[in-house]
Image (cartoon, helix red, strand yellow):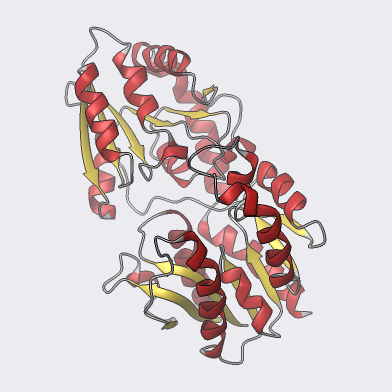
Length: 369
């Protein structure tokens, strides 16, 4: 097939960008032609090695401004301009808002990989200073957004919780749960350095709740623990300050190369991923593949594909998280069987190749073949 992929940006080195890049790579390996359309791409980009054989077209414009009211008309124009770059493809696969709006300007049969329904999270939250403008405007935005995506033939989503939310937002469009994927390209060596190393790989943003790990570790006395953060975000300085207040040893690595990430997986004794309202989650799956004892929150989408042997704590309950971390430090062997069981599930059902096959089936359906 001749497939067009659209993504707001190719800048960030994890999450949706990795998902799209791995999809492109595996589709090309299977003999398909792939073109990528984006507003902006870093040069060089961390996933350039996956995109060598892609035709990549970009507007060379950042997709966000600091002004909420300017963003929406700007995105409308940018999506229209992005479609002008598109060739004659068999199917268009939009990844994430706002490139879902490109479907309004083309007759290409379109599948939308909707990782998160736009605007809905702010609307569902209690009124606050953070959403005081977004929440009242959501009904108007939603009405306009539904019109912009009305030509989309199918939505793909990550997990059952996302399907329920997306169904409420777009009740007229068929939805399929595809999940995503996770793989490790390198064998992980487990190294003991005399410290219990706890790892989080995520943007340091509010819904990832990075401070919860500091709060939990701060409750533990007498244990030699070091917390490693991989990622950047608006809460970085707040997390640093709280770590100093509680006397928690925390290291902030920023965004890192895969090589550095594998080094951190090699020293990690525990992986902690306890976000709120989190669709999927590549990091906890990679940690399990690396055979690192892992704890997740009850709002983490990958709960759909993991067995009950993976520890789960209620989002925001730092006392329960502290207790779970303490138990995992004291008795790591109690978690080895669950890790091994879930590693096999991930390797069998959630490789990037398996994800590409699921998406390809949706493309063929949308294109009528």
